[in-house]
Image (cartoon, rainbow, N blue to C red):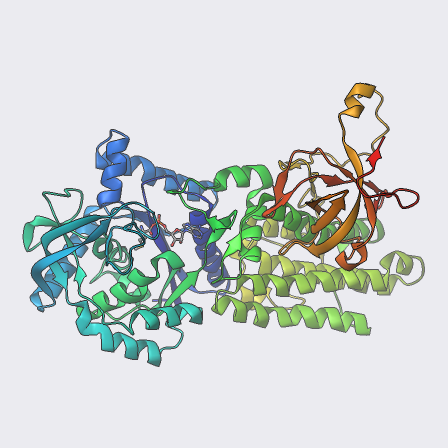
Length: 640
Ligand code: ME8
């Protein structure tokens, strides 16, 4: 029916534990992509769901002393509710225990069996329950699973096999003919790498004597289906394969989105399964890297997880979305850190975006009686530059979104915001207000128009913020129902009245010693020298203050503010992390004398352990000035 359909899927997540921020990332990416294509006027279908069969789930249910079905019902519901509470607009949530899914799995098995690509044989291998797969001797590390580090059992049994080997040459050719079938390219190369070794047939059954919790094979009910052969089929069963209208519309444009941990099942098993079943293959497999916490993968089996709901409650949903989409280069690993999240929130969202909207609307209120002026024709070089950046945005965002380069799309939007801030600084509407009302209206009109377009293009990434922007700019909303073709034109909206609203992002205040940032609910007031918080001389003496000399200094990777310093205090050297990058280029710090709190409990900031803290003064503009002895003293000297 629609000329331009778009289909995006996430992995269906295992129900052996509740969702963490890694799962949230993938689902938020799919939501962003879906919103973008809706904005572009396409008919979009966004599928997510849960993977509920297999050893891993059966064992988790047993540990929870529940039946597998009751357990799967409960955990699947937490996934669905989490996505709903995060405002993710999926079109369907599929569960592999639904009858309509199991029927399609059985129909596809039957078809491939009838075509002669499934046979009965014997197999021995080292089985990992966590991965739900056999490992060869070569792949094991000291008899253990390389991923889960669990000792692997040798299992020998009769099973059914899918003749995957038969499709090896076809798959290599397909990857060569369709260079963007798997992207980014590093993952295409990884799959081509797997395919340089002979492809073995895939064991697709488990005897029921060992595992009951699965879909019975239609041609031998002593066996259940291997969980991957079951799970992958969700992408077509959800569309009512083979005859559904959804299947006819959306399968020809299918795009999958996954993390790199499940590249092989999606890059090798799934296309060959589709080929054997006579179903055209998907269009693109989009693969992202891992979110790391302290250098290791965030993962439920390792207990290293961060709850997306907790983060969204603490910082707001859009701040979480923005951080995830801006911080990770799609395809590469990225570090997840609360400090980095807060820095992005304060610098990009509160400052660049929030301040621009606020200062613009304050002036519209003050000088134009709250009426948003139409931008009119550009008259100065500055007007033309701003309009040019705004008009170039659609193309740049489209190009970045096509290849899932969200950080690039956001960078392009930030170029417009930065251009808007620069434009106001240069045009100085507060001065024009005194002498040239026409120019004043043009400048504020141009800035408001740039902000309206920024809101439009931001809407897939930070939907609630974009709605607030449009509401405050008095644009007839909601943005979620706008279409790029009409609303994306410069000057598309007529004159209108602004609507006063709250700041988009209150700054989050936190000090480096306190790793738990908290949202500042009220603007921070000038701190008056405290009198109620008096301390005794004994309490003061507990502080071990020392003079130290900076030996080395470098910016902490991925941080806008942090510097890692190696400092010498007497005979001892130590590492201290300080948030002074904006005021002190690292090279200028080397050789300086500083004062440190030497007995501060160590804390880790963006993966670097800091032992101690530098003392500095902050002036009312936020400028940081380091404290130093009035004349050089021996490093290590005590400060009393
Ligand atoms: O593999 N960083 O389910 P799963 C980034 N049921 N993404 C992460 C992540 C991290 N640290 N941790 C998890 C399964 N993810 C199968 C899929 S599909 C037919 C069957 C995300 O619950 C990422 O998308 O282990 C990864 O691929 C997925 O969760 C794995 O989820």
